[in-house]
Amino acid sequence: MEVNSIYEGDNLEIMSKFPDKSVDLMYADPPFYTNKRFEIIWKDGAEKRAFEDRWAGGIEHYTAWMEPRLRECHRLLKNTGSFYLHCDYHASAHLRILLDKIFGESNFRNEIIWKRKTGRGETQHKSKQFGVCTDYILFYSKSKDSKFNSQFKPVSEADDEYKEYVKKFYTHIDKEGRKFQIDNLASPSPRPNLTYEYKGYKPPAYGWAIEKEKMEQWDKEGRLWFPANKKGRIRRKRFLDELKGQPIQNLWDDIQPISSQSNERLGYPTQKPVALLERMIVTSSDKGDLVLDPFCGCGTTIVAAQKLGRKWIGIDVSPTACKLMQKRLRKEFSVSVHIIRGEVDLNYVKKLAPFEFQNWVITDKFLGKVSERKVGDMGIDGFTPQVLGGYPIQVKQSPDVGRNVVDNFETAMRRIGKKKGYIVAFSFGKGAIEEVARIKNAGELDIILRTVQELLDGRVD
Ligand SMILES: C[S@@+](CC[C@H](N)C(=O)[O-])C[C@H]1O[C@@H](n2cnc3c(N)ncnc32)[C@H](O)[C@@H]1O
Image (cartoon, rainbow, N blue to C red; front, side, top):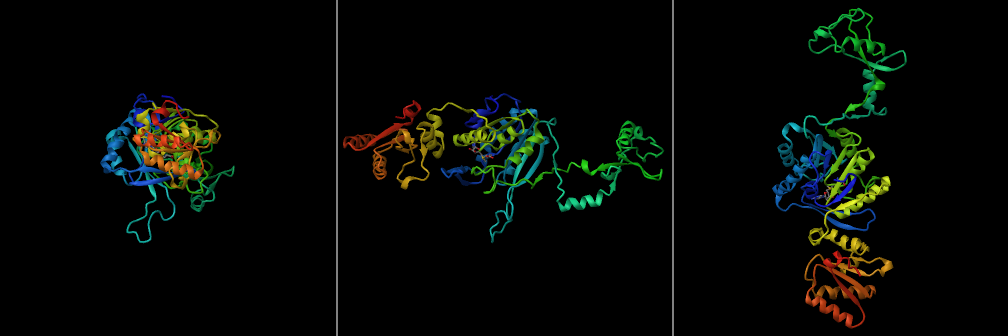
């Protein structure tokens, strides 16, 4: 397990190699069960590709896929560790049952509701349901010994509600000009050992809330309020300048989603705001702790962890996402991070999503550039680097590619006026090979057929 690294591959396989009880905090934001197809539009507009979030087998299929991954998350957590699972209404109930089973009901901490949309949400004008503007974050701990650093929402002087509150409660001012309110100092239950007289003031019926030493200390610090009448009760001063703010509750409506105007926006369709991750990280970990995100996307978790002085590991199955994370870390922290990949063999390449396959061939192997748009839809997916001729490349993630593919590619090459080009596939049929030979013999164009195995062996010429 290499900390501060990005792992590229299936998180189940990668996590299974990590040791038990090695992680302090995990945040998982898996593909939701939404039956939707997202379009990835990277910021530079260079790539527009599909992002699948589709579970043909229904919810059981989804939970069966999630279960072993959630079990791995549980295994990796230390006893003091915490787990946050981000989901939405499609699957939250199912995931809650599953997590209760894995973590134990008593380790359920909260269902956090994040208001991820402002305004009217998704309600259409004539819809017969309420708009949806929330996601859920299911929060579990590994045991009762989990870390929890309470968080407070800072109060804002400009907030009208706050101004009213101060006016109503902070009605006293001490000699130094500090505003305070007075609060009860009586014990709520009988405390015979805390029943003592102080400076001539009788104790309340159940005694004081603090011991005599503490009473003396608070007195010295000016934290006690003594009524003029000795028959009255001593009270505690709560100073306005020591008000930490309101404790954070499970409704998180103060963290803005990534909008088209957000500075942090990278164009990754499911990108979460850094502030959301920061809240979980400061709550459930300390500096130097290890944070792991098994569905890391464009790296929001690792950016927040790096910012807050935590160690981190990000895992994503998408090579494009991993490269984006690497770029993001370099840009934001000037750190260069290593991507750890499992073995890249035929099996790995076969399983890549179509756009990932294309990126692998064109950018990883040919060091070229993926076409911004399909060139006239003539099947040109990218080009070799300009210094190496800028030749067109067509990519087929299939075996036994036939003559018609070669013919179409030949037409496309003629149209753009290139004399050389590459077609990449798992294998080529006899028709394709003969056609390429015929075209070459005619002496005008050079079409090179490259198999994926040849690319794996380093042949890109
Ligand atoms: C909802 S997105 C995460 C977004 C992320 N929280 C962010 O702020 O960018 C889910 C991610 O899970 C990745 N993913 C899907 N299946 C995976 C698997 N089996 N192993 C690792 N990553 C996976 C997808 O590539 C996608 O990037």
